[in-house]
Length: 532
Image (cartoon, rainbow, N blue to C red; front, top):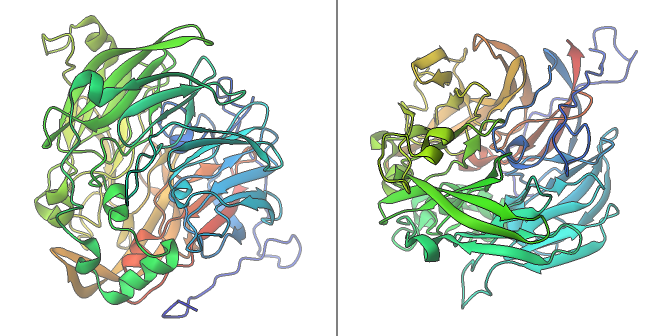
């Protein structure tokens, strides 16, 4: 066993009648109706909930929950689970320390038991599984896009990236989304956008952003700093036990400083506009590039739009409002931010797409888009995609592990508009927000942890000693914490909502791994609602 300390395992009995005080699960339908080719009535459509990456789900969620099951122990999830068209199966991609171990899983929603599992390249743990209206599965691993049949058997695979040259990661695809025309869209870590046909995976069109724009990758922490040398042996052991022998660059890539041109999921507008965050005019700047899909669904073309320029790199994917009018992205992520986060600066930038398309924004150059407004973050750049709400406001969380992790008075959550914060919230009892936010009609969903500090530092960052982690439900209009339930580890990805209103927490456990006296349990936990 690789765990250094025992864990308190909280078992919540959910069998009706076994205890008069046991909460009784109820069903709260959640079928916001994502557009085709997503399944009719789908509750959750991939990375950041939908092709717009806006993490907004148009349904009402419960106010209290009970744990139903905990699956996939020992396997880390950096991206959310998704669902079959009928909602009876959930799909999860994980990291697995065993190169021959399963990392794509189909799980029975009712029981939590694994129905089938498959093994793909290790990098599949960085993607979510997209499901179309026919129940076929789509995801990425290394330089490939894969499609599986409902039973997990192979359907097709297509190489979208170049073969690796020598040692290293090579060119990798960074997740998928479906376009309004029904194609599979991805972007590689080298900034190449590719559209594939869903039926057979044939390549329809590609657009090489660096080649067409002349933009260059952001500066990288890898190559100048060995992350393993910054961490205690016990923490490195946890990394190895979770991911296998830790390849240099993996953590830096996750934090937006891995040296690739791009490191985030493509965002797609209902207007057939693609948005990619990546490198910029020089290594100290980045850019969010707009591309436009034209032509037909069988013979699409991609043309270049404008670019919104950022400072340093980004660990946020672009996030678009459902009507396509607003798009946001965060900046400020670079080697300096990773090594000395207390001195890092980060902003959220929001563009008015209509103004930039018409060149009526503040920049006279039609190929450049000036933000309509921006908001400075108090604790450095965000690692994740803040939700873009329908009115053009954004929901943000402050990255507590970076700046002031032990400051209980600093804000944790806020909804911010062009005129500033609409509300700001500091969580009670020393809780710090740890995941991307999912927004429903009445709640903000995610995870939070109480972090006990250690005396160990990695450069300027004080590592945790231990964590107590929770599923957290916050009132959307006030920022008040209305419910929490214990989980074994911190999360990173969004909490997903099932068609019956259940919440699912996939645990990446990054802070737990970094804790000096704690090791991760990981896996996927289902919570069912008990109160409306």
